[in-house]
Structure formats: structure tokens, C-alpha cells
Length: 147
Image (cartoon, rainbow, N blue to C red; front, side, top):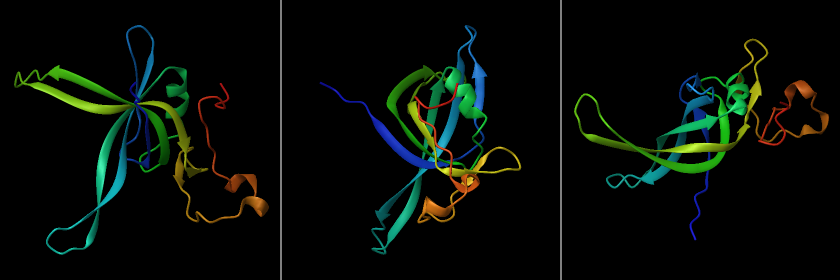
């Protein structure tokens, strides 16, 4: 038995790129920066460093999600690893990469009223009992996207 599940949270490294295949399928490509920590061998201090992960989403949900994301938006993604390989046209060498095929995505930023995108939530310890709806971050997963 094999399990291929990935869960990541991070910030978009660029604005989403939406395209359509010749057969009409929408394809959304995003890049997500995910921080990690490691100990510096020379100083012994812990250092943060970023991993840059390409992620892809397909179908009508990809179209809808693309309208709500901007560079810097914080997201949580659940999906599966996908391995792809191709021949580089300029060098003729075999190339490969692993990316994440998105099954579920959750917006972890507050909606910006000016441009419809999302911005990071400033206070993660907010009690939502006395907060207006305008301050509550929107979240969507596969089953509750309203289209």
C-alpha cells in the first residue's frame, strides 16, 4: 500500500497563472514558499530558509480560486505529489520536477476590500466572538466553494 498525501501552508510567491488546455480544462499554477528551519553547522544557530513549491489545480474550482489569490496570500494546501519529466529543448537533457496537485485549498488571509485579494491575518489569537463578518477570514475547501 502507498500513501501520497501532502499538507503545506505558506505564502504565494507570485500571482496565480490561469490557463486553459485545448480541450477546455482550466489549469491554475501557483508557487508557495514554505519555511523550514535548520541548524547552521558553523555557528550552531537555527536559521530559517524557504522551500519553493509549485502547485497545480484543475477544473472549475481552479477558475474560481484564481480570483481570490494574489502574490503574498497565505494558503493551506492539501494534495498529492506529482512527478513530471521532459526533455529540455535547448540543451537536450532530461529534466524533472515534483510539484503538488491540489485537492483542497484554504485561504488563510483576510480579504482586501480594495482589490478582492487576500492579506495575511495580523492577529492569529483573535477571538471571533465579537468580531464582525468583515474581519473573519474566508475559507473554502472543495465541498463548500459556492459554485
